Length: 159
Image (cartoon, rainbow, N blue to C red; front, side):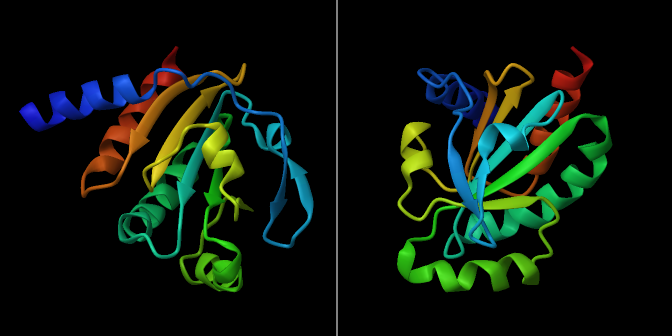
């Protein structure tokens, strides 16, 4: 229980200074330019920063696929942001296919978007409301964290 209380306060502290979903152009897996704001969900936008070399990321992605499937018809969109460096970019698309990621994946090889949003831990999941304001942050991933994420999305959708 103390672990969850500490986690709550760490997430609360980590969220200070983050505010808005940036309106930037990014590349998708096909190397096409897309606007991040065009990927917004009607009610919520979940943005997950991950890397192929990150073991907690690999554990989180199948759980996020399930949560995405549960919520996509409710005005929620998911966007995966891969932060692998330029040398590892060739691994990203086969990795996405192998894990059957069903939501849009964009590329941030120089971690510009990650830096803009003060991301320093992988995976980091951010939730933005319909106005693009950050309303939830979850850093790292342990078994059972999918329940925390699911509960938070339910709470935010009920507002």
